[in-house]
Each structure stands twice: as structure tokens, then as C-alpha cells.
Length: 238
Image (cartoon, rainbow, N blue to C red):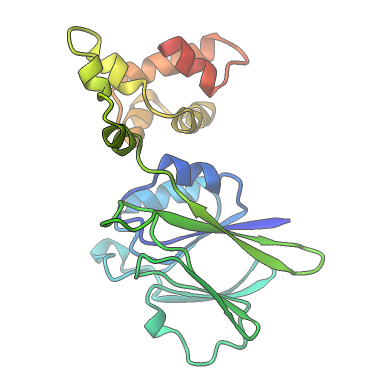
């Protein structure tokens, strides 16, 4: 079984939940409006990346193609940011990927499956945050699409439920510790993978937007407790 992660319109944001899904994929397709090279490099660290340029991708993205036509995981794939720029005849393709609208869409026309994974970047208005995973059965070539609805940000969920923020809980002492240890097990798992890759404390701190002191604490707990996992690190930080 081959798996292709399909996403679009990240607009400068690579969510932990999205990265966790992509770690299980063989290839990543991004249909444009990535916005920053940092997100692109982050995706390349996870799996081979095929990407096209979106209308919001400025000068830094001049080298990215406007459209793509490739055989990927045994599928004939066409990708472009805006569906309006697709060829009129798509019968020679198995999968056509596009974005731009931020709205999930999945439909079949003849032998071609048209897929807009929606946006899994910053939430816009009340639209859902979505991406997709395409699974291909290698022996038969049969494919199926799995829509992935990404949960709301932890902070947004807390606000909706009326809970206090981590910083508010930390007032009176230890605020930074409480604030930074609320990140998810998924995010910690990504940090630990970077530790295993030998990345420096400074690089990890910048990549995940946490302090150098907190990064050092995570690394120390991980390296001095053989066999500990991300959940175990978070428990010891609490």
C-alpha cells in the first residue's frame, strides 16, 4: 500500500497534526499557497515533495512550477493551484489535484479523480481545516481518498470551552514552564525525531518556536531516560 499526503493553502503554517499524518506517507503533494520556504523545507524533511506555485507565493517561489504532470506511486498525476488553469481534457490522468478555494472537493469524471484537499493552514472564517491521504493498492492500482479533518488549535479549543490559558494558570511563578509544556504529544514526537537526527538545540528551538532553555530540558529528559517516548517526556515536564 502506498500513501500520498495531499494538502494545499498552508499559508505559512505547518500544523503538528498535519505533520503527524504526513509522517505515514510515502510522498507529499502540495497544491500551492505555501507562502514561506520554511514550511516547504519542513515538508521535505518528512517525505519527497511535489509542489506547485500558488498566487500567494511571491518572489521566493519563482523557481516553483505553475503546474505539474508526473507519474507518482503508479498514478498519472496533474497538479495546479487554481482549477481554472487545468487542461480541458483530463482523460490521460488518474488524479488531478488543485487548491485555491480552501474548500474540500472530491469527485470523479471518467477515469480521473479530481481532488481539492481544502486548506490546512490558518483557519479562515468558519471553514474546516482539511487535507487528504490517497491510498493506492499496489497490485491492483485501485485508489481511495481519505479526508482528514484537522482538530482546532489547542488554544482555540480552550477558549471555546472557557478554560484558562496556560499562561494564566502560570501567573505567580513558573509561567513559561506551564505555557510551553502544554504542546501536544505529536509536537513533542516531532521534536524528538529532530533530536535523533542530530539537530542542534538552537535549530530545534527556532523551528518549533520555543525557548532554548525549554528545548534543552526536552533534550536532556529524552537523552537521559533511555526508551522514553514523547508522552513520557511530557509527563516528566509537568
